[in-house]
Amino acid sequence: MPLSIRDRVLYIGNLFFASRIVKKNRELKNIHLSKRCFIIGNGPSIKNQDLTLLKNEITFVTNKFYLHKDFDKINPKYYTTIDPLSFEEDAGRIQLLKETQEKASNCMFFFPYWTASTIQKYNLFQKQKVYYLAIGGEMKENKCFHSDIDKPIPSLINVVLPNLFVAHYMGFKEIYLLGCDHDWLAQPSDAYPTHFYDKEPLYKKSFSLSYEKTIPYVLDLFRSYRLIKEKFSDVKIYNATAGGFLDVFPRVDYEEIVKNKK
Image 1: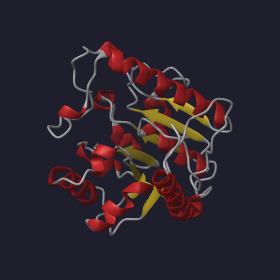
Image 2: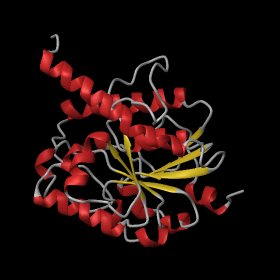
Image 3: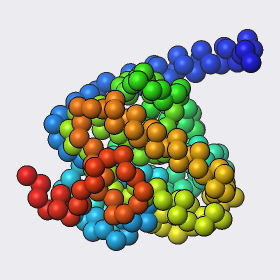
């Protein structure tokens, strides 16, 4: 269905705003050239891995990672949240953002560009450095999508994915994934999404995990990983998750990697 005149104006306005706000990201280009990093998802597997081994590594964390018992010891450098639910303007979710801000005071943050008004309205993350990502559009085959974060990048259905874009833009040559269990299809269909932390009352009603709805999501997620692997052929991406279903990237032993940095 063709867009109405009003929707076209809104679309063009949003595109202009997104393009303008992400120009700041150019200062991040190749700032970690040829180094390595670790992107930590929130899967339950990280409960069985000693993440304190990462205290001298460059780490990306996501969403509720500030709840991890070793957060302060790990001292993450980068923090990303893209879930629209996290930015809904109700007291509970704003409080969760404030908790993130307080706990992760030393982190640099990445948020979707459309959250800027909410962050400014509630005076959030005023003491932290914040960058925005213009997330929208389709992850296309044949590498036909932007990968530079100073331009609009594709819609990304899992918070680990934008971190891969950011890490690639920063010039990392080795990227290790942790906590990317992605094993929902092995769970009962009425189970709550599993993380390393306990269930959250605010989010319980927001998820439906029937297999009918989960299977297309999983297919889309794994396809996105594959397309990123093809697009970022100049980077070595490894899966250091303990277990899980992610088979797009070669697996490595987490402890062996961190204990033998050379």
